[in-house]
Image (cartoon, rainbow, N blue to C red):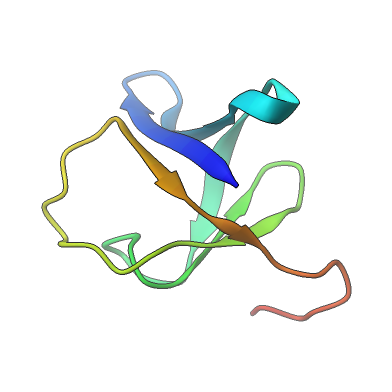
Length: 74
């Protein structure tokens, strides 16, 4: 799914999903650099992000993949 990741001073990193009209803060990530692993957003969803350079500028629109609801990603 297409998502936009951005950084804001008040919320930190957040993700916006236009098709669902949903914006949620990113609460946990597999890697400090964000890219190439999973992220968890405030509503509990876990999304896999593509590999990208650690200095990729934000905001950016990317393709992310939602993991299944019953998987333990930690």
